[in-house]
Image: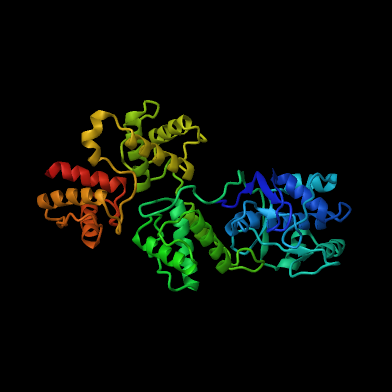
Length: 448
């Protein structure tokens, strides 16, 4: 799965990072052409030109992928100051030879070994300045000796580097999900912070390890967030807002050395854990059943969305058609695939319906899934309702232990939830998502 995407645009700061200078948004491909025409000469051998263009692109993509400047609080992706980044001259003309090569190879970058992030391919002129990376004038000498582009790159960066071709393009959207993550939040963004907290915790052992990278913001995740916030002098609230999100990413990039030529790097297995929320035709499991649950509920109130799906956990043609209808109605890319944007929009649509229920549903509102996951550490009225349901079930079925109705989701409540999940054939994780909530309500209605 390709996880690195070439941005369609890039924001360039016209000065040193701290300088009061203009930020301009330019098409990515024009940025690469501008830098290449400012850094190298069109008369150089083709192999040298390609090697330099690959290095320029890889360095740029590393800045974007790691959000090097955005994690430091800046509103841009890269500067045009060569003490920090690459030469970019607004309004300059392009050389045809270089322009044509960029058109051909704009979505090619360098990786090291099994890592997936673009190599932080440092380079310098090799005459006026030297560095640990590629020598621009040195590439000319090597090309004249018959070196190919990849041989030149391996000469400077090591024999374990290779090229990735035809990377997909996508809008350059900052990684922060837009809304704070807190107890009960779910999804790929939660998995991201769980993975990052565990890795940062290896360097800062006071951060408690999160046992399961589940994508559910549970109490263990909240405790890890609180510890991180305490260490790095952030507001200690156990919530991952924008400041905590980017500080975590900044520290994570630092301990992994993702912006250095030689880094610990990200492996494909790590990245797959982040991007596993995509559901499509043929998939099976509880995630599919969850989508079917949401679509059925939404379809009940919106005639544009076909409901009546059998919640069998099989992503068949009827489920795909319901997803397509939902995507068209909400102006999403209509591909019938449930990616992160479709996931989030479905949840938002569900929440919107809950907030605007018609009067005749008022009496049933306490039985409807509240729209967020209820986990150990949660508290308040919704936990009281959950415990009331569980208490009624326990009195009718001794396989479920009775719980106190105190509004605190502790060990006893978790044990009762696991018992219901066991009875209903669900994953016994003690977490109350839509499927478990639905199972609890079904049993509650049977025993009350």
